[in-house]
Amino acid sequence: MDAAVKPNLLFIFTDQQRLDTIECYGNDQIETPALNALADESFVFEHAYVSQPVCSPSRATMLCGLYPHTARVPACNVSLPQDVKTIAELVTNDYRCAYIGKWHLGDEIFPQHGFTEWIGTEDSYRQFYSSSEQHQHLSDYHHFLVAQGIEPDSKSFGKRIFSRYLQASQKEELTKASFQGDRAAQFIRESADQPFMLVVSYLEPHPPHTGPLNDYYDPWKLPLSSNFRLKPPANASLLNRVLSAYYMESQEEGYDLRTEEGWLRIRGRYWGNVTLVDRSVVKILQALEESGKADETIVVFTSDHGEMVGDHGILGKTVLYEESVKVPLLIRVPWLGRHQRRIGGNLGHIDLVPTLLDLMGQVVPDHLQGQSRVDVLNGQTTLSGNDVFIQWNRSDGHPRPGEGGVNPAMSTPWRSIVSADRWKLNLSVQDQCELYDLNADPCENLNLFDEPEQRGRVQDMADRIRVWQTQTGDRTPLPEI
Image (cartoon, one colour):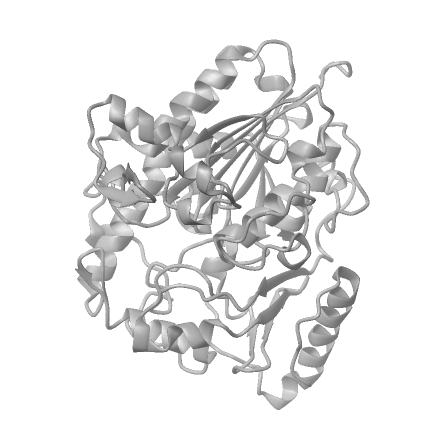
């Protein structure tokens, strides 16, 4: 690429998309041709981890390069503080910065944090707006649906709004995903010579698990992991056991999760919404190619966290199992070659912002808590020695079953390390701690924390968490080992 040309950034991420939903991660039965084509030209990270398996904290890390406790976004529906800068505030002011989709970091539909162009899609976070005057405004997607003759079915702060279920129930060309693809493609087509940063944030495949492709996949033909079984984990944490017991006695989206059929039908719908996103992404990538800017544009695809969809008997995220904390991560850097290269070793989302700034030729500020991995992309080094750290911060969590006991279990803070040699230690002062050998037991079925022969390993890994806490200013108490 011409050294005088500033690279563009197209940063696409979904909400609640687990790793095994793309062909490059082993799923050759789901239809994701756009993401498959992107993966064929990208760095494919084999072990990419979120900072916290729930929306707002993870998004703070992805956009700011800070851990949730540093960004002061420890839980969902906490606004990103004004003095915490996103990547859009860290690039030079000649960049045209736009945000399309779900934000979930406060004042949902309003331009902020360096993004001067904004297309909002969510009206479900109106209770968290910073001023009552903002309740007079509704999202761009709301106005789009009204223009199509669709009537809102809900009410919020004096305004009629569309429920997420009604939004998701539209025919494909009227869905939120399709709307975002059209608007993102339009943004790219209208970009002139000014360098741009475009973030496209999808709600799908986040619940509600419904959409125009509900019946696209035969539930009985879905491949299942060995973790998919209708019984609670045996010697796991109380949190995991309570969640599993709750979900396996519940009805979600009208399906009886006491039965295998109920789980399979939700999984089929979940796959359908992944394919729905892919059909939107293809519009964006086609517009990029047609614009002539593809060779000077970094493209990133990832998700803010995963989804259990029945593995270990759990639905949703908010746990430390691999299905919840491990996500797809594709990075296409055209001037480094447009062919697939797989990157082994662990990578945390904490490294995204410094890596992208470095690739864009921008200053990488000292306050960022991750590090640039451009040397890994260049083949100068590897991730073979990299530990990653994950947290859970006393969030009230999901679901909220009243007397079911899930909220107390989810109010317990956790700190986790996935070590370079692929062991995972999950620590809490109020729950059964966990140690898993991800090499021999990738499904995390055998908790080795209390095994006497693992005492040295547990001590060493706990010490690494304490060092990380000191380096990042994390004061969460850990159990005595």
